[in-house]
Length: 339
Image (cartoon, rainbow, N blue to C red; front, side):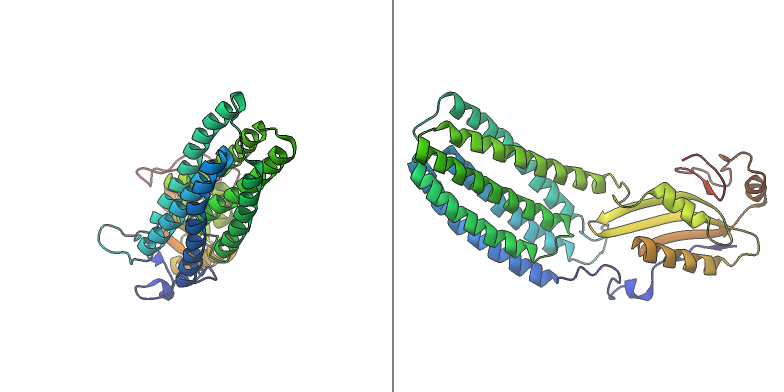
């Protein structure tokens, strides 16, 4: 009567590869590029703290503080990559893949918190600006631009489809913008003596930090709340599934992300009497993989009960799901229906 086979192809068995999940960059290569970026940032950061204190530049000190979060974000990313690579076992049936999303969320939160602190300090500098050594600020910022371009290039070579790596990349990119702003501020102070330029540059950087931090928290939050991937409309997907030959109804449709770049789907599919449940399942799995890139599927395929078939034929009682004790979400039939 029913086909409860999980929709995983042979390559998804234990010990096999994950077809459809190749990111084009190996984990070892990711770690290598992240390690190079971490070294560049750490060495430069140590020198910048000293120069920022000597030059009395909040912009330089804020850049150094931002670089500290860059370094921490890369360390988080490296740790998360190690954890995510561990095989699924015991109570962690998906493994520790979402450690990467925890890392991305931590990166977003540090950007927001650091931005709030820098905004507070920048306002104080605007009210009571200290004497800033513009020449020293300008020269150091130029060096910082070069270091951050090199670090950003290194991380861009890693797999940025991972929200974890993207979080580290956003940190580096924001730091690059920060150094550009600091260089402009240093040049203005050097040429005009307008010391408030240092605080203004800091506020511009803060706005960029808030934007990046909010984006990371939003995307990681979507994954933790098991929302559908941003490029998938569950209602449209359900309508497409129910439009396939022999399919009468699709309900309890769930689509979510295990981690960035790895989506999963489950659904209860009802097939017309006499329909081949196995063939329908295979066809639906192929459609999901080809059109949506979803290869982790669990489809429960059954022949439609007589009362549900009558409802589907007459179009009446579209909300009747008495064959399912606790249905979730809309019921999809090949007819107009509520979403």
